[in-house]
Each structure stands twice: as C-alpha cells, then as structure tokens.
Image 1 (cartoon, rainbow, N blue to C red):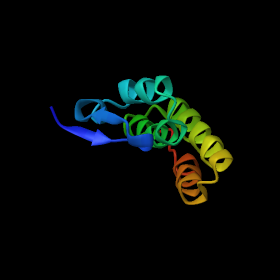
Image 2: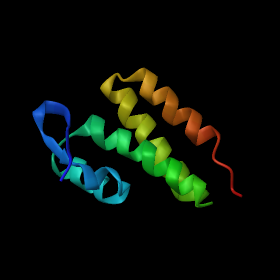
Image 3: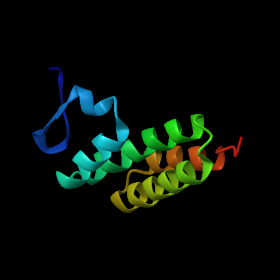
Image 4: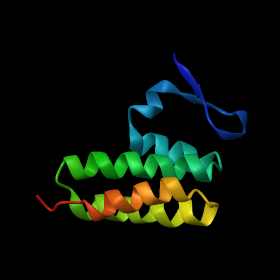
Length: 89
C-alpha cells in the first residue's frame, strides 16, 4: 500500500487520496485542519465536475474559511476561485 506523509508526521494511505470523501473524514478525525481543508478543495472540484454545484460550492467555501483561519492565504484564494467558478451545469 502506498503511503503519503501528512502534517505532523502522520501517514495517509494512498487509497484515501483517491476517495476524497473518505480522505476528508480521515483528516478530520486525525485532527489535521490544513489537510481537511485541502481535501475539501479536491472534493469541491470533483463535485463541480459531476454537476453537483451546491455541494461543490459548500465544500469550497468551507475550505476557504478554514484556510483563511489557518493563515494559508494562497490555498484560501484557490478555494475562493473554485467557489467562484462553480457552474450549475
């Protein structure tokens, strides 16, 4: 199994990175706020690609809020751009 390093030296199984819903839950339970927010960005992108605009917007806005609170402005700006570009299909 492929493993990636998450914040604070915790390992994240590679299969979780392929399933953002599971990865989001994992990051939240592990207490990794930055990784949780970044996973929300990935989830928002996937949801937008599936024409699930309302859910995508919710995830992107939550990611932006959390990332701004963490001081990760570049990532927060990315989340805002994704939120602004969500198309209802």
